[in-house]
Amino acid sequence: METNQHLFKELEAAEKLFSDGSIKNAQKRLRNVLKESKALDKIPNKLRHKINAAISKSKYFDEISSFATNPKRNDLINKLDDLIKNPNNNPRKHAHKIHEIHTQWQVLDLSSKPASKSQWLNFNDLTKKAWEPCKEYFDEIKQIKVKNALSRNEIINNVNKFVSDNSIKWPNSKNLIIFLQKTFKEWQKYAPVLDEDLDKLKKLYFDARKPINDEIKRQENENKEKKILLIKKVAEISNDDNKKNISEFIKLKDEWSNIGLAGKKNEKKMWDEFNKNCLLYTSPSPRDLSTSRM
Picture 1 (tube, rainbow, N blue to C red):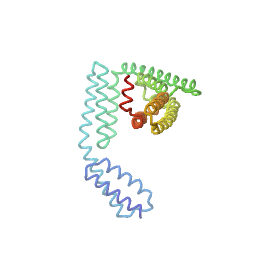
Picture 2 (cartoon, rainbow, N blue to C red):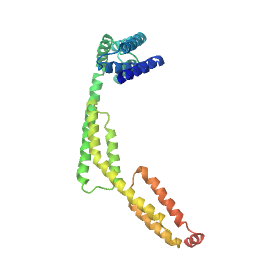
Picture 3 (cartoon, rainbow, N blue to C red):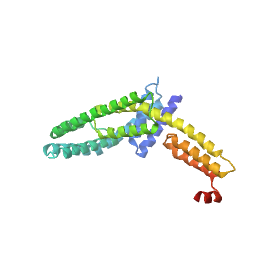
Picture 4 (cartoon, helix red, strand yellow):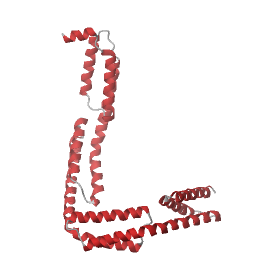
């Protein structure tokens, strides 16, 4: 019974979405209801009537959608046909025009009922013909993408080698960050690559970088703890002789300088706190200032 009530509420939500004009979302809710209702041993008559009413409403909106969008789809089909008969002399511009038509077609599919099978087959067939004048251009582009993939593979190998050579004794986090920034800059130079290579290369690249990122994080956490201790030490400076306070602060400041980075989120905040604590206890007196000028 609880399941039935849940389905009634889902159908009411779908009806409201239909009324608000959110047709796609309403149809998605209806599909979920239909899927869940199949698991019921028996669908109550009241629920069956409500489902049928929602299905009728969904079909109505599909018909309205098709009536509005089919002429637009036919217009795109005609544009492709015209492009085949009158190809652009510039392969890049010709390809861009095909891409533009495809984008418009996809927008129609997202905003309304998908095209009929006959419309799609016609559109797809014309698309293949429209691409023919671009064949040489795309062969050239493909070769560039293949070379880019090889270069990216080489970058991945270099990162793996760096990890292998340095994992016993890592450089400091600053140098590791510089290395990653340098390799990322190189990585960006070799784009685009073939779609079939994109995800594979991206995974290999991030897997290769992971040990370095982990080490940077480890060092930054360690440096953070060291700097927290220095902040506490600065806060504890309380000598009656202000010169000794200043001298102690300078020593702690030198220690701070010799500690590596504590991470972007922490570094400035911790440095400000370090200095704030210092000012509380080491502000020079007028006498100290006059002495220092001499």
